[in-house]
Length: 158
Image (cartoon, rainbow, N blue to C red; front, top):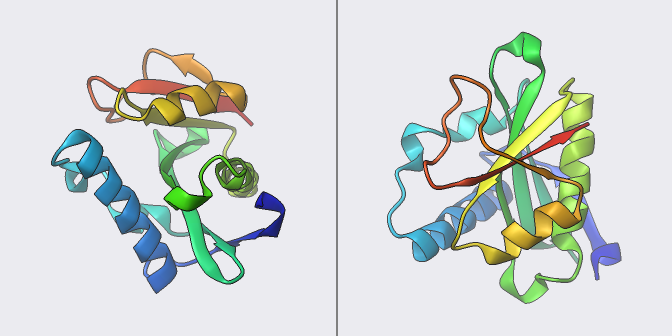
């Protein structure tokens, strides 16, 4: 199925990107309860020139999405992957892998050298997925970067 998926960079304010972003937040709230992520992530951070939001479509329909934002000092060339989400009926079909490969490529184009992400206990699929795709577990993010206290953190050198 992933071969039929196209990935496009879209403005976070576009209807497709906003729909995927909010679907991801909705799922996080269903899994973890109310989250207060607004204080730690503003959608504008997922926009150029330091961020991006990628939307996957299958036959023109939304399939998923993922965001990238700069973290740390600009000179460190570090970014964080945020809000990877795939439509439930397309999970385990390769869409997440396609999105993450596109996100890694877009991060390289933006000049980033290393990516970080976090996930948690209520996302066992993600905890299994990231190590299978070359992500290494780490204990912390760069100094001054917010992470959720109970999160499982990963990094990947680009």
